[in-house]
Length: 64
Image (cartoon, rainbow, N blue to C red):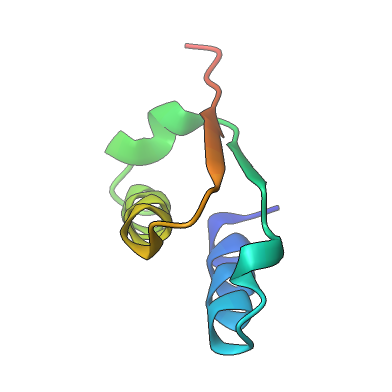
């Protein structure tokens, strides 16, 4: 799933007050945080999840 789609799903869950049903977010290619085109979306999504202070486990993976 692309970062834009994932961010949209997170936004929808927040708006619909269903974010509490989310338990785990797996971020593949976490090294893309440095990418000038996609990195900001990953950072925005992770920051948003952390600021919600919900019990959501964030798992970051990277092959590099």
